[in-house]
Amino acid sequence: MRGKAVASSRPPAPGRAGRLFAGWSANLFQMVLGITQQVALIPVFLHYWTGDTLAAWLVIYAIGNLAFIADAGLQFRAINRFFQFKPGADCDDRTARYYGAMLRVYLGLTAALTLPLLVGAALLAPSTVFGFVTVVHFDAAFVFMAAGMLWTVPSNLVAALYRARGLYGRAVKVQNAAVLIGQFAQLVAIVATGSLLAVTLAYAAAQVVAAIWLLTIDAPRLFPYLRTARATPSWRWIVGQFRKAAPFAVAGATDLALLNLPVLLVSALVSDRVAVAQWGLTRMVAGLLRVLCVQTTLPLAAELGHDHAVGDAQRLQSLYARGSVLVTLLASIVVSGLLPFWQDFFALWTHGIVPYDPALTVTLLVGTAAAAPSILALNYANFSNRGDLLVRTKGLQLVIFLALSAILIPATGLIGAAIAVIASELLVQFGVLGWIILQNTLQHPLRHLCFLAGVMVAVTLAGWALGVAIRLAIPLAEPLRFFVECGLWLVVVAVAASPLAIESVRARLTAAIPN
Image (cartoon, rainbow, N blue to C red; front, top):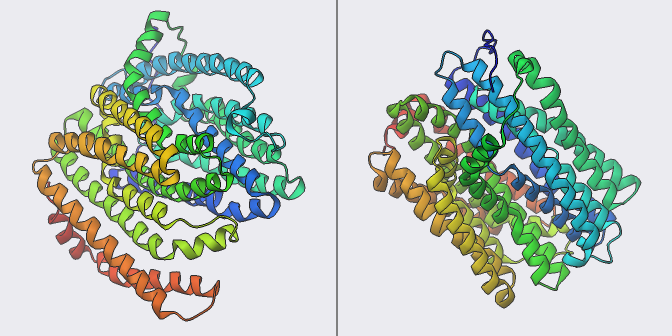
């Protein structure tokens, strides 16, 4: 793996604030698109599909997300290597050689996984496994979704390079464009054909095209030295990359499993198809909350990883403390607004076809909010090369989740699945990984943890109580009542939060955060 050094052609990187806001703005739009995909499109699908077909789509969508487990931790391995190259004088040359070698690994891995997928689907029909033999084209849609998402995995290498070079939002913007185009295509497909296969094709094809564009056009144009990379990695080197990426693979697989595997487990273990749709829709909103927290912390984690790489402990402590408060505050506000109004929205959203389960909703939302600070700890661990910690804690979390699921889902149904997800996250990711990161990062971890707990309890209870009071005070009929209630809640919360626009107030509040 040798090559000639090339002159640096890296574009000028913006400052920390600019990088964070660029990342957040791209992620915010990604969240809007995610809500559109998983919330706004559901009523449209229900207009053309039965509840069984919607449940089938939710399973296929989950399979598409699970396909990213194929990354096998290589993306975070690449991010940490790119970080390590930054201080060196031959940064561009080493980056180009490593990028070229890893691209070959990614392409070979994807091809190697596609063949057994096709053979397995031919031998054992997915519709039989998941109980959708009556849904037309389920098998074809399942295979196309899984294979299509597999072939987007190599673009993770481009995203890794962009994150390490302070251009985090760029790859996200390309992905956002693909999702937006795919959503328009899904609307055309559902209206024109009503076919599950057509909707799946529309969703997956846009993602594949975006991945090809990033790999073949955008990255070489932005970093011209990538074009000169000629690397033929040895088998020993390839095995070494997988070995060093294994801890990140365990962590990533656990997160994807906790987000998507419950849908498959409920589908396989619960006979009621309406219950499967009920779980999928309720878990979807909790998943969106978690994704919001992840998207908020990813730009922060990239900056923390840089501080860790250069040994700037003071900036790292300050940013970590403020970042953990930010994600806790964000999760608490969202949950406090969802809890009082979700029942009314759920009825409007599903046209009353899918019943509302209050215990399931409260368990998933409150549990997800409680675990929110640990998401920053997890992403910082990924960006600071803490493989040993990740493999121990996330592996344990997956084992606990699977054990609880096997015990609780057959006995208690949906609430058992919710308990399995939340308990594994609170016990391990929050209680073990999060606490270890706090101890290693901050000077007063216990004081900071108490501060986070106070923020979460105060904000959640205040917002929830406000929503209940508004519901009791509004006498209008549905659906107007729902929109008026939500609008009034947002106005009151905005007024209450308006002092944060004053710089001196923000400075005093920031100074009160224990480091």
